[in-house]
Length: 317
Length: 280
Image (cartoon, rainbow over all chains, first blue to last red; front, side):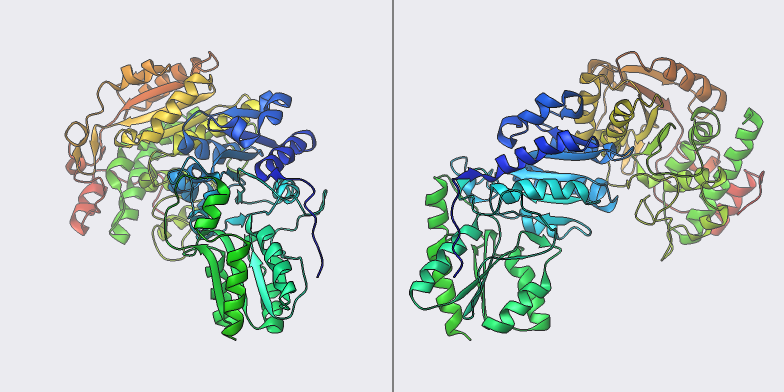
């Protein structure tokens, strides 16, 4: 099985910040808006380098989404930055009407998604955002797995015309994908080849899936790990081709099992190739305070949980 | 356009509104009629705009309708100004039409740059467009229209604070100040208080157009508003209008906010407004 090396832990939000910094230099149409969280979103560099293209909106996320929509009229490419909770649920109607329905070229960039936000607790740990955003017609939903991929995704969405939701996180996690990789929206990345079980993961759970696959290998189980960085549009063929080979699938995400990646995959498989599936996701619950590692363990979102789910789903073939 | 031409268009737009709403037995005639003189003047006299529609609207004035339910009036004014064929007004609110119940960009209707209907969002959008104009060194003005009841939405005040705090001074927000909303008088539903003082306290230039259904008063007032742009403050115009203006039985009440006239009522309303430019 192909092995992946952690090049040193980094937060995905810093990958976003690095991508935005680069876009500042390479794309004059890019403007950045923030709702009083510049440091948290790692937008400092862009602000310093391009003060005329940076807009501090204040604690007024609804207004930020509307301003971003308006700024596209005249050719700008706005990147909004705030926590995932305030980037979605708090401003859902603004996104729905002024951005999605109006087909505006806004990039909604959301940090601190999921449980790994940690100590702030459930008010800030949104586990419903993928569901909210994937339900909006025309919205692209991306959840990259590490620093390098988040940077690449940030660059890629500037070149795509249309509304995008880009989800990333707070803690430092393994950085294992190639530097300066090409990011193709909607194209899954095969990380390992396997024959017994397909493990499809997104975001922080991709590294956990790789750890699970290594453990499974020691037990004689061959797992095919696929990184689904784009939840919408979903790379249907990659999933179907893999389960044709393995006959079962585990989906893993830092999100509620209702509305997340797992449900999107279930829909496709139920239509085209009904397949046993296990879900590694939160079970219709809010989060709570704790360290990221404690929370991921308590809510069953780590390599151990993926291993268990893989073994279980294999017995269901 | 001359005042006479504008007046003729006002009458015709009234007929369009009434006939559109009557045909599908749905829509919002009251606010549409109340803002007819304003929108006819805006598109016919006040704004520098290009009927060869381009979404980006570079080097032209832009208008955003935030209270999207008065779609009949904007559709009629856009059509009568040549954005799209007037015959298309026949499709208002029908299936497969570009003239949706509330305006949308989704169907590519010329003249519409943002969807509106869910209230309170248009001021933010207009501010965004005004900021982009500044970045593009485009001296044009951005206009918006809001219902007075719409000001009950919190996002309006987020936007009002932002525009003043960031000197968005290439922007004129107009309030359709008819003091009525769907459930009754704004004073009964949720009192707006002193709107002039509120906007001034937020740091805006505010002026009233007391005769908001009088073309000359509108043109003079908007010229005054335009003269106040470029001075570091956003400009708010309180346009004192009469809901249902031009149709006697629709005036002085909120009852026609979202109700279509019957056949007899339509006939009476049209008789009060004899055709000037020809019906669609």
